[in-house]
Image (cartoon, rainbow, N blue to C red; front, side, top):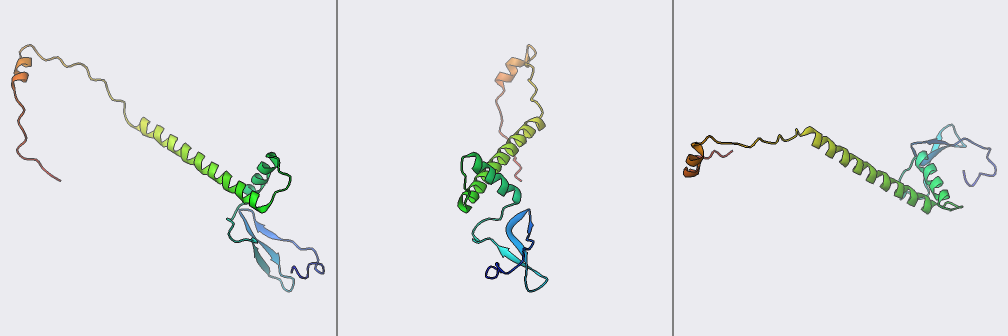
Length: 135
């Protein structure tokens, strides 16, 4: 197709907005579509939303021209920010849920023994258990 691009008519390219790592172009000799991948297959698939957001952030940072390397670097940076925020948010939410699931520990009232039992408790020595059940 590229070799004959000056002789071909304009044609419609198709893409999946969730994954623009490949597009489909009509085969000039038939009715089928031909899948055309990225120029470099080492790049991760990205969505149209991610591509547009990355270009907008690059433009905000003062870049007039957006090249392939800068675009994918920005997408990777945005993904890391999102992953960190999601993990932090998830962790904080789970900690709050764990704390609210545990009932508040009641403050025990001070124990007062009757007048004669305090002396008897001090005299009694603790005896070890004879049989300990192991599971």
